[in-house]
Image (cartoon, rainbow, N blue to C red):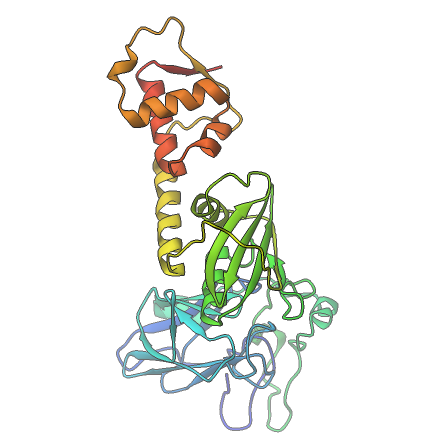
Length: 357
């Protein structure tokens, strides 16, 4: 941000001496919650537009090939925060929707390139002392092509600015996402955010995700039409997709078009797929007492309770346990979504039909 005519500090985040108080008496900041700059906060100043992009001359500089030179602009005026996309190549996404312009509210999530930002309303004390990540080593900044934080424009008197006035840069390594290869790490970019970005930019290709397992998500003009986990090609595309969305660790890589035909193409929209996948993940998280995936499930002997007392879903799950034994294999072979199958296993254990080794 600029502090008076001709005075600026060239850095990744420029905070020199700004007043955070809005006309409505609130204090606002953008917090990076995902991406290379996670943890950094950028306060907003009333009636002072903030331009975000890749150009080193802007207010918020994101070193990311998915970000346009001038990507988006935010303005805080009369207590409202206005967001405008500046004709970026990959678009600006707010709460899962691509927007050209929007009025933001507290808690909104903005995806720009590989970064996810959250709009916060803070107290005056919090706003005056934003929390920023530790300072990056200068040689690391040079490797990542980030301007040095100590560079000062001497067009005007900036002698009062010391290193303490300059915000700390997040720790970075050489770029983790590039346009040429489109590779990156899931711990920096959530798969759900990445898929929304590809959807709005109408990407075509195969997104390969490598963690403890390998999976592939096939896209045509931004629409997911198939998904498969390499080790288990028999798992339905929707179940494979839902599992991959929950992966938090690993690498991803976007490859070119793949002409492999699939008889069971996915027809749901990306929004519907992501909402259903997150719902399933939430339900699994709420289930208590789930055994480890490698657990052996044993049929009780003697089997006291009659099988006719079981519903069709419980009986089908009972048969899967009888045939495969291992909890992971039961989930893999079930035609039900993982959350439902796990719930059936827990119910069979509760009623004494099944036990753990």
